[in-house]
Each structure stands twice: as C-alpha cells, then as structure tokens.
Length: 157
Ligand code: HEC
Image 1 (cartoon, rainbow, N blue to C red):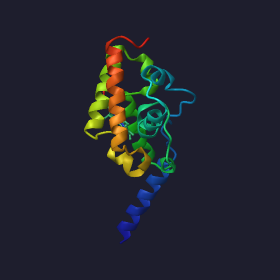
Image 2 (image 1 turned 180 degrees about the vertical axis):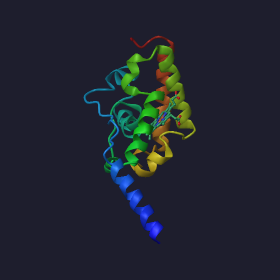
Image 3 (image 1 turned 45 degrees about the horizontal axis):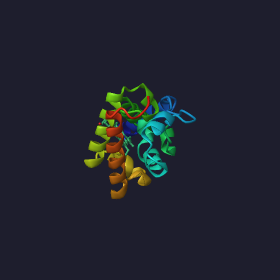
C-alpha cells in the first residue's frame, strides 16, 4: 500500500510538472488559405467542409478543444498537427509546384475514397468533421476537376 501511495505521488508530481511545458500553437490569422481557395475554387459549401474536416491538421490554423490545455494531450495533438501539415498544408499551397498540387489532390481523392481522412480519432471527438456520402462525392468531384485544370495548365499561378 505504501509503495502504491509513493508511486501515485510521483506520477502526480510528473503530471503537474508536465503542465508547465506547452507546445507552440498553430494559430495563423487572416486568409491563410486564400491562395488555395482562389486556385482550386471549391465553392462556399465545400469551403466549410474543408475547414471543419481538414484544416485543423492541414492548415496553419487549428481550432483547439479545451482539453488541449492539458498535457500530455497537448503534446499528442501538436504531434498530429505537425505530421498532418508536413504531408499537406492548404495554407502553404503557393509553395507547391503544379505537379505537387496535382499529386496532393490525387491523394485527397484516395484518402476520401478509402475513408482514411479525416482521422478516426479526430471524428470521435469532432462529430461535425464526419463526411457524409454527399460531401465525399462533392469533394472527389471537385478534386478531380481541379486536377484536370492543373494538368491543362488552366489555373494561373
Ligand atoms: C486529426 C488530424 C487530421 C485531420 C482532421 C485530417 N488529416 Fe489528413 N493527415 C493527417 C496526418 C497525421 C497525415 C499523415 C499521416 C497519414 O498519412 O496518416 C495525413 C495525411 C493526409 C494526406 C496524405 C498526404 C500525402 O501526400 O502523404 C491527405 C491527402 C490528407 N491527409 C487529406 C485530408 C483531408 C482531405 C482531410 C479532411 C477531409 C484530412 N486529411 C483531415 C491528419 C489529419
């Protein structure tokens, strides 16, 4: 019993100490996805879908839940955001070549077709990020159309 108490106390001290370390937040302001939206033109409805289902991990602005204030959750979320942005960042669309944009849209189609995105652990806690069948179809149609425009060089860079 005594050992259990000691272990609990040590864990408590670690937990409290952890709270002093806060990972840097992902909080760009303004029209951070402006270039992506003007080039790919998803339209107002899909713009909201992308914002609600993808931007938290694939843009420079995350809407943090309250529990992000608690370590180690904050570290876990920061890791996911970093990882997501490394693979695809709608806020830095202008830094991608046309070939890369086309490829990323191809990946978007694949991820949605396979129901791999948004990540399951995310939709458990973000119900409005779940994609309906219609939203999936609309996103795929938009990504396919935009790919063909990039391939035909019809989107001014
Ligand atoms: C909770 C965070 C999170 C959300 C929300 C999310 N993603 Fe992701 N996404 C990731 C992570 C992490 C990776 C990289 C690891 C992997 O592939 O699983 C990734 C990878 C991707 C890739 C692969 C890019 C590449 O070139 O490797 C695509 C495409 C993608 N996501 C599209 C989307 C779309 C579209 C949405 C919204 C419908 C979305 N994601 C929502 C975290 C997220």
